[in-house]
Every structure is written in C-alpha cells, then in structure tokens.
Image 1 (cartoon, rainbow, N blue to C red):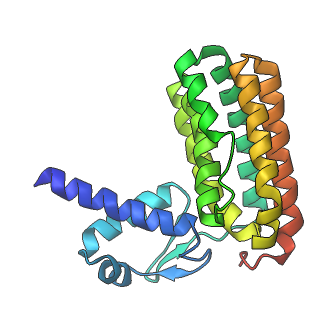
Image 2 (cartoon, rainbow, N blue to C red):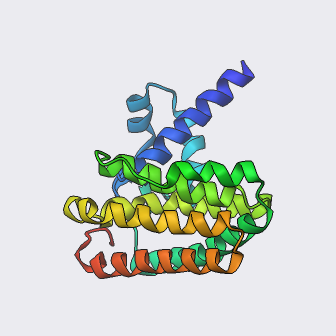
Image 3 (cartoon, helix red, strand yellow):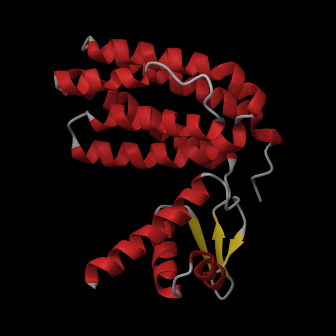
Length: 219
C-alpha cells in the first residue's frame, strides 16, 4: 500500500510539473487543490504534496489563504537561469568529453538529426533530452542533478518564446549545432565542447531576450 501511495503521489507531481513546463498551466495563473484533485481524480493529499514539492523547485508560489500560483517568468529570472545553464552545461560537456565511456559517447549519435515532421512539442522534448544526455554522462552525480534540473525548467521558456514559423526555420540549425557539440565531445576535445555549448546557449539567450518584450508572461 505504501508503494502504491508513493507511486500515486509521484504521478500527480509529474503531471502537474509537466503541465507547468509545457505552459498548459500558464505562468502567473492561480491553481487550487480542489480543482486539481477533481482534474486528476485523486484526493487533495497527493495534490498538496506535489504543490509543496513544486514550490521547492521554484515552479509554484504559495499564496496564504488564496491557494497557489504558477510562478511567473520574468526577464530577470530567465537571465539567471541562462547564467546557471552556461556554468553547468559547459562544465558537464567538458566532464563528458573527459570521463564518458566509449559506449556513452556513441549513444549521443541519436541526437544528430531531428525528424523533419517533428512538431514544436516533440522538438522541445528532443532538445531537452539531448542536453540532459550530455549532462548525464559527465560522471559527477551532483553536477548531473543540478544541470538536469536547470535544463528541465527551460521547457517553459522554449514553449512561450518560439513561434511556429521560427521553429520551422531554426530546428535544422539547432540540430546542426547539436551535431557539432557531439563531434567535440566524442573527440574528447573538452575545450571545444565547452566553447560550442556556451555559444549554443548564448544564441538561445539572445533569441529569447529579443522576443521577451512581446511575451505576456510577466505580472
């Protein structure tokens, strides 16, 4: 029974988290335990537990006596996330180039191309999985956890900042940049791997900040 309860709580947490990251639950929107419990057909207890866990991840704000709010995305928050991502992903790429096994390096080849028919939702997952995979072979468990947590929070920024038209134009370019990073990591060229990851992230930051003024996501 204990395992079933834990699995249910984890499942509710994952569903709410995914809906926040995909902006199904919009930044700045109010959410309530009763509504979510009815939506997921569970009691309030696992919902409350999930919301408190999401507060620890800075995705939810608790409003005393007023329920909860999905944390808005602000320019300063986005900038700080990019700064963290630059530090963590560069280090992860360098560690991966130095410490990953041959089998782990070869596993990155699946990210060299993106399916032409891929929609934005699928591409965001592909992009996230690529960056998580680089971090995942860094052979430093604390670095892996910290990097992957920051990467996961970028789904929201991607969904709200990339228009369908821009996505159709740029998805091939991003896949090409991924291929260059893979080449450097597989060649165990840690300096080039770190440099390419930094350039890749800075390009993403520039694109988002340019679009930020048009995004209705700040309170």
